[in-house]
Image (cartoon, rainbow, N blue to C red):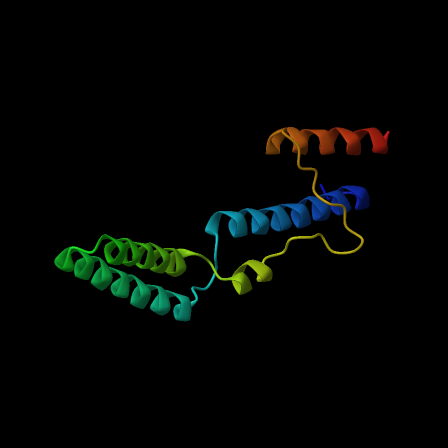
Length: 125
């Protein structure tokens, strides 16, 4: 039994929303897409320099050199694992013109889906 035009439009709208929500979910879960190799290499070099400073501080019994070495090591690791600004800028943050912003409340995904379904059913009546 073929679907009516209204049912086909509703099905297509649900598919579009599913693809859009699924893409948002994947982007949110995956965190960053492509790693920034320059930041990783710079972070590793900074961490190695920090390790050398830490060892030098212990060997020379200079507390300040060891603390600076530890700080460099910590900053290098953070630099290597933090996503770049370019990767964060490439992710969609605002909805396109003509589309509604997704309703972000404390309600769960299924609650929002049920509310949308109820609104559609009321609009159809």
